[in-house]
Amino acid sequence: MKKINIICFIIVATVIWSCDIIRVPAYVKREFNEYHGAFNNGYDTIINTQGYYRYISDDRIPYYTFIMFFPDGTFLGLFSSKNNLENDFFEHLLYDDERNIKSFLKHYYWGCYFIHKDTIEAISINHVISLNQYYDGIAMDVFVIDNEQNLILIAEKSKNRKQDRFVSVSKNNISYPAKLTFIPLSKLPPSDCWIKNRRWFWKNTDAWKQYKRTY
Image (cartoon, rainbow, N blue to C red; front, side, top):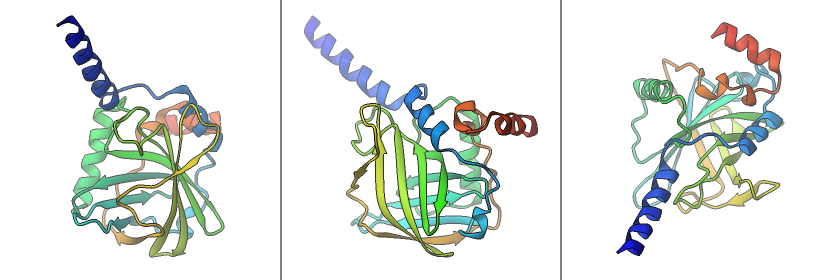
């Protein structure tokens, strides 16, 4: 009986640890501190930032990937089984993010992105421990800019504390290359996400202090 209780405790603890609120690990902070670039970089002249890009999987039950790029170099991503993203849904996500500002594991995710010629590298915080093998501490999505209305997802990568580089992953519900189509929004949410309040997200301390004074 004692052995059964111990096994049950381990299972419950693992599930809670994989789904509950945990701190952002140091190696994730270091990754963002290394990659995060300057804000106000003119990205809104290269891609469309007045809405979001959407990908629909080719599964029998469609699954949707949404990603919204902000002009300041941050982005908001979401996986959903529903195709009903409206302005109030984005606002709800942002409200929930403020309410659970210390939460690390979420069904949506924040990150920063960089554009190199026609390629976008979008780096985000993701699950560190999860029953889902495709989730890890740091994730990188690589897009090719087809035009202002379309992006092509060509690779998804992950990195954890045991790896010194990003490695490619393949998700069952995505066929590569995957085309994302732009959907405009009449009202845009702000990009004042919780990770912008953290010093480790910023490459420059003075820029972070200026942001804190402004917001």
